[in-house]
Length: 228
Ligand SMILES: *Cc1c(COP(=O)(O)O)cnc(C)c1O
Image (cartoon, rainbow, N blue to C red; front, side, top):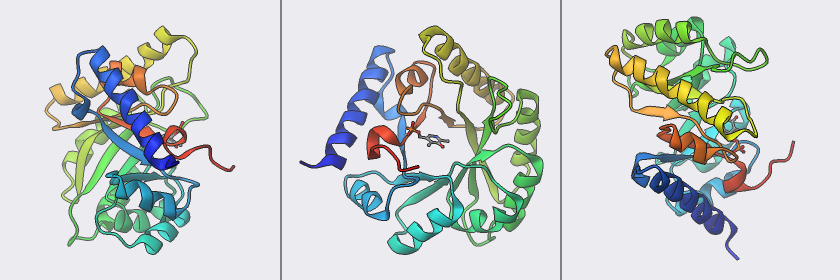
């Protein structure tokens, strides 16, 4: 039995079904494989099956895997909490950073991104349900961060990322995702050229896609349960 292939096909089927349920095309939603706490071998296996984007939330762990794989085709997304003393490595070793939620971090990433590299792709993380234990900026802060990001040459603002509060209540879950979508539309309407609305994980990708997600970040459903 080929586990990575079976799991990938089942996630792709979920994405396709979620899209067709709301009249969207499946190619409007891209897949980020969240490989945190999983070994480099499974990244390699998934890459052979066509997955190119991988999400990590621990710098040292990610750097170890990058070193082991040394594959320029892989696109690495940093999706975890960012400490100031980690920005230099993140700016150098990742193609995307999805968890930017503070001016200081944004400025540091911009100034530490090597001038020879392509601009760093950024998503701003919003804490849409105002959960105190969660990372992410408020709506107002997001608007300011977006203005700042657009003025930085080494940064390419792609969109926003959110981890809405999990709820058993479908409608409540959909409401949270729709609030993120609304913020995304407000940013686009005010002139920011965005193409990425990163929301939806293993448990809620269907709801996220119904609300307009363009990138789902899938760990468990694609790679199995993580050791903690
Ligand atoms: C771990 C993680 C995911 C994936 O979660 P699953 O429920 O395993 O799919 C997605 N986004 C972020 C930011 C994460 O930290």
